[in-house]
Image (cartoon, rainbow, N blue to C red):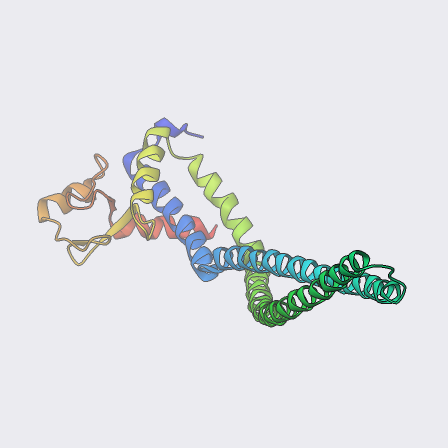
Length: 254
């Protein structure tokens, strides 16, 4: 078998077009998947962010609840002291003791009122937090529904195309093995320059099959002679004639 460098220009063009044909088939599978992989990843990140937010809200609710319970405990403690001081006030012996006990009774009464205010304010904040939590849970449920649908859609496409894609990637690797490194470098560079991934195109109706610019008759003659690799003067894509494309298509089927 001839080495890579021993191939004629025509054979090189056939091999390049065969590689392009296989790679274009892989591109079609990726197009079929479209933005689904990225959409799934973005949705996963979004759901995780929402779950983290829900966790923070739940922690805030727990903190407010603990605060309320602590204030209720303070009220119970103040009420017990209030009862104690009121009982002691019945046994005072002088005005000094009476004033001291009254001051304590007043202080405990103020402490109870302050705690009750803190509890009211905290309950209002708690109610708002619960609303926010409920909204967050609903949002997560909706996003998870969309995420699951996208995942199922992507998994189905992968299942339907996985075997075909593996076979195509094997063919692509085999085709690359029949092309010299210099040509492969040019092919990859051109292919990566265009969104449609076309680096090798046919001449169609006297025009480049990539950019559709007119190809002069003399240039077309040079393409048919197969003496050298010809590229489009406008877009830089490698040009092949229909016969080479047909030969490549026949080789691809084998």
